[in-house]
Amino acid sequence: MPLTEELIDLAQCPAAELPHGALALARLSLLDWMACGLAGAGEPVAQRLRRLAEEEGGRGAASVIGGGLAPPRMAALANGAASHALDYDDTHFAHVGHLSVAIYPAALAAGEETGADLDAVVAAFLVGAEAAIRVGLVLGAAHYNLGFHQTATAGAFGATLAAGRLRGLSDAELRAALGLCATRASGLKSQFGTMGKPFNAGIAAANGVEAARLAQLGMTSADDGLMGPQGFVATHSPEPHPGAGSAPPWRERFLFEDNRYKLHACCHGTHAMIEALRAARSAQGLTLDAIAGFTLRTNPRWLRVCDIRRPRTGLEVKFSYAWLAGMALRGDRTDDAATYTDALAADPALADFAARVDVAGDERLTDTQAEGEIALHSGGRIRVSHDLAAAIPLDVLADRLRAKAEAMLGERASVLWERFAAPGGLSASEAGAALRAGA
Image 1 (cartoon, rainbow, N blue to C red):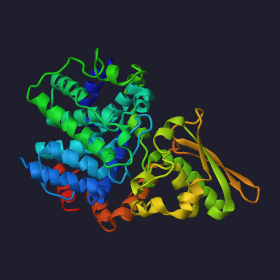
Image 2: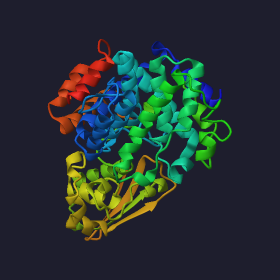
Image 3: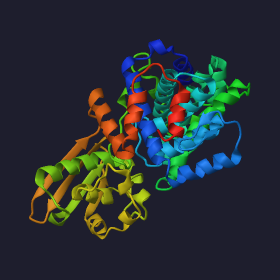
Image 4: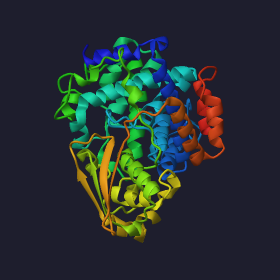
């Protein structure tokens, strides 16, 4: 089945036919997204977008995290940016992006406006996330390496289908919505390390809400704006993989089940290295002074993302292998978003250690793997490695995500888990109200 047809079919899948394991993971994504959004509500990018929402006004139909009500498109924009502001949200490595921050804001905004229950929002997110993954696979690594931020580009198509599902769009309307999204989707990696990166997530969510609503209003678009001639894939990827998005078909396996969650408040591309170094520090009792040098090997594509050699701000530290290596070996709280201050970028001990870090690309490694070697002043050498692809049992993941939320929110995390962890009985508006009130 052609990709566009498959995505439309996916968007119309009855909730009862969605896999239970994937739905359970999507519920954890909801909790993690809400926690990240609440924790990021005070960040400058979130404050500026709330200010824009207040200035533009309009019909208040959807909740803004830490704010009031706004038009759904604006709420999705503000909430996508707020929830990605700390860069502490989930990652799907095959999709090459963050699913929750692009799709849940669109799903919740559409759910609030249409009076949907929260279970329907979770199901809409799941089909939108699965669609975004498959679009990302078709765009291929070449799209990302060219400079596009797949969270915003492929993510926008997922946001469109999530919003369209909640609005009850017909097949023809979903086709039009995807076409409109194709001419709207945007986002560049050059924004990494600035407020523009979380803004990209908001753009994806807002584009999805807008495209779905315009299609419902009868706006037409290209027959296949995604895969057709001069469509999004043809114009945005020099090496697309047309068959990748439909193998295996979603009815056989949901690729969303490979989604991974951040347990460190920095770029996910650095997490395998951090886990490897923290394990070595714990096992060997290492200190920075004992280390003559550290050589890291990582998939080459990460070199364009997380290899800022001399970060100038706390935001840029989150994308610096050299700085984060020193932090992991020193025992810094890489899991605490409050750690990443501008003062950290001027830390003399980390600057000194960064000069001893060498980072190289290795095509043999996947996106989830890191390998390296620590050279000691004593002459010894310690090999380190870690692979994020190893699955974490659902109950263990739930405990870790709750602990992460508690670190970010304190007692407010308990409110989220107690109210929204179990399916049934709650509306999208109740979840929105919790986000407005700061839970």
